[in-house]
Length: 274
Image (cartoon, rainbow, N blue to C red; front, top):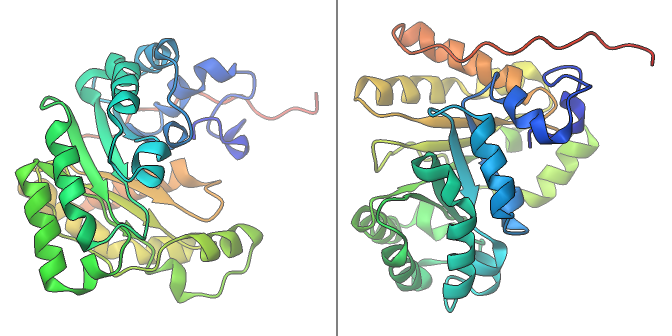
């Protein structure tokens, strides 16, 4: 995500080589979603460069490969997981193993999830994102999943799209997201001391900011409880995401003044004609 085209000359210097853009991104935010790992396990040498470009407090939430989660649905994936764990090992404790499951993975599949989570390394933080509606609407299914996650000391990642789906999409990016993103109730319960939230706003900044206000209060409460939350802010095109993330952080700091500030971004040279 740190190579998003729209961020060049805004959040990342235009002249910066691709292999150094994560360092610039890390000046804006102190965590990143590893979505590319869903499509292919990165080379270990590549991950070493990620580790070198970021400080000890920078958090990587790396999505497990789709062959593990979507194609084989957590069964018979020993070789693939060994390769993946070896690849991301240079990130050490900064890596969160993010198991994003398809919408068809429901309560009847929870046993497979429990077995899978038990086999993950004990020293690696883990988090699970589910999209089957019954986990959100049936108390029994909710309790079943929470019990499995608690046994594995794993977090439940909510993907909050409630605000996004309140307005008719007005851009190509919003129409694409409208067709692809899940429509699920907002969930605000944390299971561990390091909760993770994914939030999708709308096309307008005003709509996005207004929609995240419940999360400002929730995150502030988590911080007061001694938790260390991570929040990822999205819009349909993600063009303004780093600035929005910092604005959200500022909103939380108004309620929790002793929250550490985010890092200072490196200067970005002004755009030129050549």
